Image 1 (tube, one colour):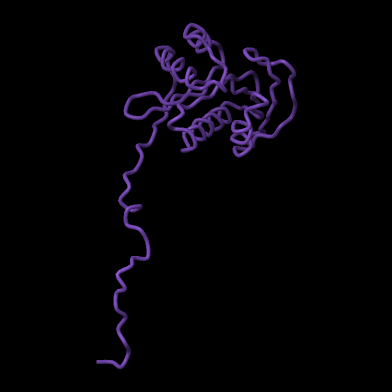
Image 2 (cartoon, helix red, strand yellow):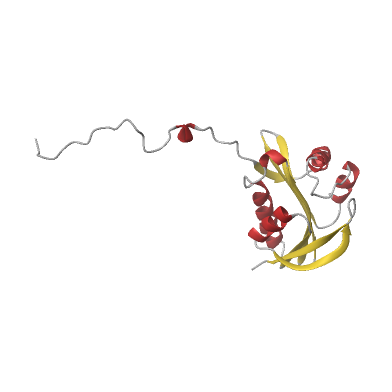
Length: 174
């Protein structure tokens, strides 16, 4: 034997094993939004008072407009978020984005936005913009984290309740 001492186990683990055994959250998958998703979009919007509510008929109508991009996120076949955007020439606007409250701050909204940016870039868009309620600090921070900058303010843009909008923009590199 060598003269070195053998360390004995103190009985205290260096880290908690429970964190390693925590089950993984199911991951969402992204797909194109369809007209038959209008009811699910409405349900997500009812759970998202900071987003602009669109009736089911309006969702179906918007999805038929020229230049529309609709993306849905779902887990186990249940829709948990969506993004609807519109392209006009080399510009695109995010019209609405919402994720069910239980799935927020888990990357789902970011994945929707990233897919929209990539799709619009492939379509030749050079600039994306959006409006967000002035009181929606979380939304403003979210878009800022994803490369959007404040570029303006629109007084009285929102109704129910009446509120100003912050205009945000992101330039897309080619």
